[in-house]
Length: 536
Image (tube, rainbow, N blue to C red; front, side, top):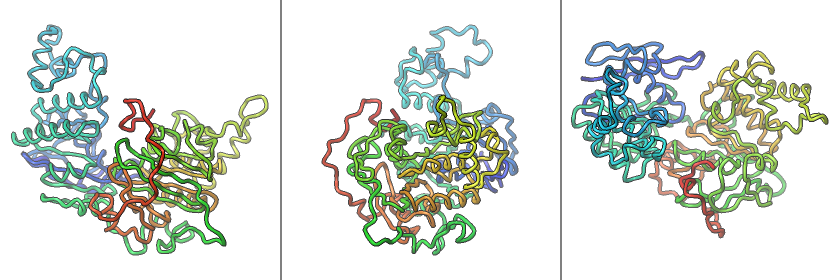
């Protein structure tokens, strides 16, 4: 009754998302799947759920090969998946009862279903769900929709249940209830693959943990689990000379022992000062400073609060509390446009959803934040000015593609990322804020981006956030480590050993957090729908 993944690899063009992954999922066992962003978790889930086929390798159940032509084939084989994006699994406009009974509605005889029969079937599916059955599903909160999906999946008599970040929208009480339901399913012989960035859940719930790193199975652990060992496996071995994002020193690699702000005759001024800020509502406030000519790395596991912090600095999310200063003047951007006008450039985490306009050219993407600079007196955009700006970015980053007039989709993911980062440098900001700039790019693209960012740091302050601290070796001067929505500690790059990083990222370190003075300003009161850090 074992599901087996044997030597599974997945290649997208020049990118190898998975490389020879072998994993057994046994009945009555909960296997945790963990890894940093880009480690290959989502790709493995897609293969197991039938959403994509492996490039090589096999899936099997009880020794019999499995070949999925799509998600319905996977469901027929007993694989039920609850994806992280919960709205992909519900039908808006239909009631809660209808969403609970989608299987029977789609089967033969659905024409003869009445509201009473749908309600009865829904009650049978989830007798203890406690949700109103006749209301439209979109009227439920995100956590309630998540509970609906999990209840439906458990009712389908799954042999393998895949839960992708199932507690991301649940309260502590709701998460405890979910854990109880998962244990009930396991007691009935179901195999569970549990994907979560919450290490406390992994420790208490899982029998084994599989750690993916750079598309490979880095390690497996059996309960009792060590949080620090899991994080160390996620980060991987770091040589004494540090992570090298390029081939030679000419490509922007620096000795981490010497990765310090440039020395000058006088004190180095602070570009950004943050006091009493909160990445996540209800978490402990902290402070940070970024000096001119310096790269501050921000790292932590997925969900640690990195993105929330950077979005506040870049004007994409309202400041929760505290105060900001930019070049000694008060700074509180109401939106990204205000941040840009103040000299702050912010490249967000999700390239496809937040930075790219489908169908637009490379040239249009480079000049989008700076349209005023490229406008003629007539109000029209100056084609020559736009083209010159785009070609400077292409040359600076070594962007490979058909040219500046080509649609952005014609470029590889790594080259798209170079354009997304490069367009902000075209404006010569005082503070450059980059959230996961190396996600989904190959080593060569990482080296190009790192080289230019390090060069730009000579004229400005830079903040780079990543869930993989190895990407900061040879790039950052200091590292701010975040854990569960607040600062866990700050290290110089020379102090940022794998052991200290793992301890801080996992919350097991006894080091004091950032020592910035607390803010004397009372916390900002937010509307209820923003109390958990949701974007405005």
